[in-house]
Length: 173
Ligand code: FES
Image (cartoon, rainbow, N blue to C red):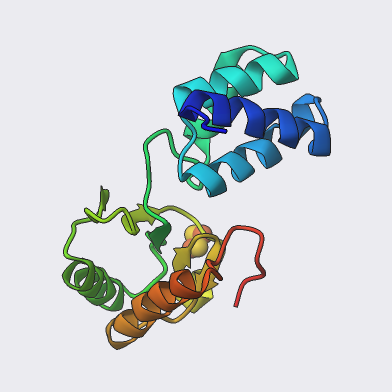
């Protein structure tokens, strides 16, 4: 059976609500699952979630806009976030940032044309003493150096080839 994107969202939210409940407290989990599957939370998805949980859509929107791991815009299969923590060595961090842009061929805030990678920055990640830190689909990479960036990206590509895509529920390395 062919589903439109909207029908798929409706079915996904209904399925998730059946698993996690229809209370307000289920919202984050449902949002994470929608983000993981669709690589973003569309305005329509927010409306459907609000309807199913019987809350105002503004509540859902405010949660989506607050958390960096949720996005209103389509994102790549891998979302690479570089921590902006001021305690991290700024030269090392800048070198990692430059290498990421070079390897991926995009600037921060952009997604590769093939939809595979989104590159962005994030605020506090709770690891002041282990920088530079990258978060890739929720998996943490600490003490990253510029020369490790190529391997990290290759690992992501290899993961996606085998279907073992890291996601937000996997434990940090
Ligand atoms: S302020 Fe450094 S990681 Fe939070």
